[in-house]
Length: 204
Image (tube, rainbow, N blue to C red; front, side, top):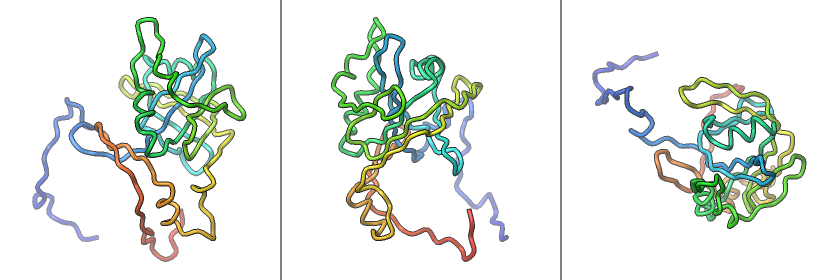
């Protein structure tokens, strides 16, 4: 391995006493987490610190115990995950509306939903990918945040977004582009993609 001289790069030391993640852009998925409220209603909340956990059917996201999303999942033991399409960015924004003094989110009434197929929950209509998850574990202690891990017990994908042997991957993203969150505070749309140059014999 050829090593370069570290001093040859124009690097800026970041102050770790400030929020590190606000100093540069990071790519993340944007998902809508659905949970059941204590009064029997449902909550939808956007999250971007979210990802598959390994190659099995586990999905996790970062939340804080202060949020109803955390409290609802801890109590009910289930949650849904909706992946919105780019033309639903305003709906995702509405889901982030702060609660009123009575702890309700009136803006949620404007969000079109559909009933989950297995668990007691709702999903955001017209997304391209949906998960229904059973709580596997909650890991606290990432500062004020926690990792919520769910096991996927039902999954649906929009037919036009499904990878198939008779379709080119590039055509799929042209038809169903991906909505991507760029932290902090921006988003983009992914329509173009390229094959990754894996070395011969590579195995995951």
